[in-house]
Image (cartoon, rainbow, N blue to C red; front, side, top):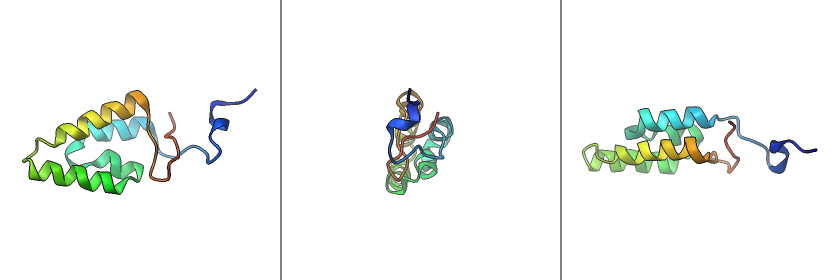
Length: 83
């Protein structure tokens, strides 16, 4: 019998899906969820879009946080986030 984590040969991230999702919802303007996950390129892009659109881009971070909570995601090294 295999555990759910044995299906990932590179292992599971030390980052939490719940923390990344909540950071994305609460601090979506700053791209905090993506920075936490190690995806700095997308985090910077979320921050720039939020600044350029005078805050309307924060909706992207909020939706991203919800999707991370629902579907999970991967960290900056491509490993799935832990539950």
